[in-house]
Image (tube, rainbow, N blue to C red; front, side):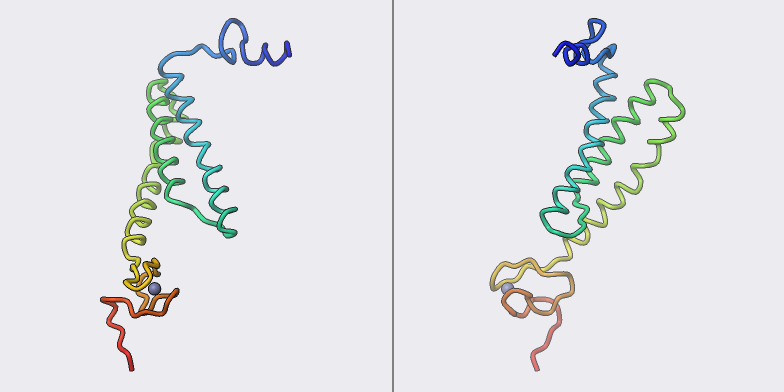
Length: 136
Ligand SMILES: [Zn+2]
């Protein structure tokens, strides 16, 4: 128990860290960025296939921006470069995800969300509006 207490409270500081507002920003960035793995893992296990949900890209974006702000404050060129450009693919993936989701079609019969460019509902077989499908 003493070693655990010593780990948490070391040299009169929480985790032995010299805390400041900027340390909180940096550690918050680390926590948000790291949490994305658990979100992706959870969704993948739940759906039984590899899935990268939009929450993963949001956590990536927010965490990396917090870490960029922290590294700019610290004037650490290594970490500034590491996080200076990562927001580009995160935002691009969020835009693509949004467009893909918007392109899905709602079935008027059963409310099922159908894949883009579907002619018929995969759940009830109803014809989907606006797809140009014709019944022979
Ligand atoms: Zn349907």
